[in-house]
Length: 290
Image (cartoon, rainbow, N blue to C red; front, side, top):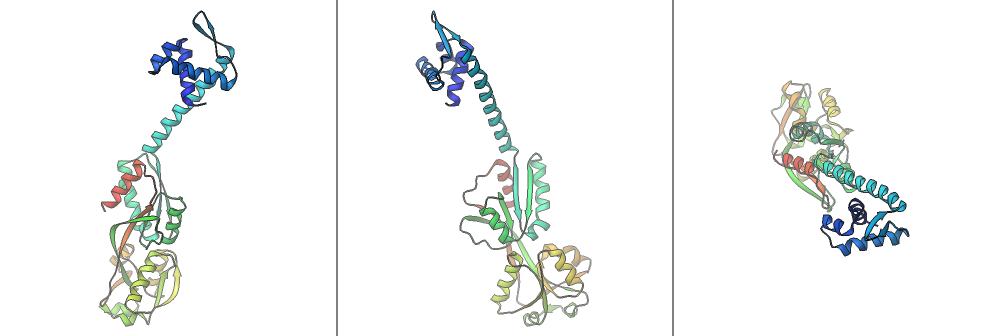
């Protein structure tokens, strides 16, 4: 049985007349009669007594009417709730560490001004893990700085980023205005874990320039890297966004490397078959304007 059958049955109960019910439903009288007959055959009961061309609902009909009213009411509530959810909704965002720490909070603040009722859930991990979450439908969109492998994921560049070389105040590089590439090979690096977009960018450009490096400290967050560099345990190449305050306060020193720049793009990623709700579209549009 379908909602159509129940709606027709309710209309007949309200009018006690097949013809009148047909008019309210903008249907033919024969279609209404057929629907009632199908209900009676399916449940093997008489829903109406037909006396002197009038309809009188039976006890079985009264029972079915109670169910039909509840079923159609629940269906209406469901449709209203789902439509409301689609407009207000919630968004699951995956962000790689750099984007999550230095870009996403501001983006969400701006988004909440235009869509305050939308609930946002954030997951932060490296690019490799965010890509996997997209493929497993655990998040709706991702904001990452690393390269995407899967052909099932669409990625759109939305913001420039640059990695910079940093050292502590007491490091020997602190006395130099510019670092020569070969000098990098003689230092201990503090770098991100494998799967990180920051590490991938660093390794790719070092490789492109035929430079090797030694990593004596590997960690999965920028704060540990900054603290370790400030204490003189090594140098690092890290997003410029992440060290703005430390460079201003002279806790860390930013150094240029002769002939080498670490440029990249932040990317908005999503599955190629993803259905976008209205809130998701709004957030994506806001992100692309950056």
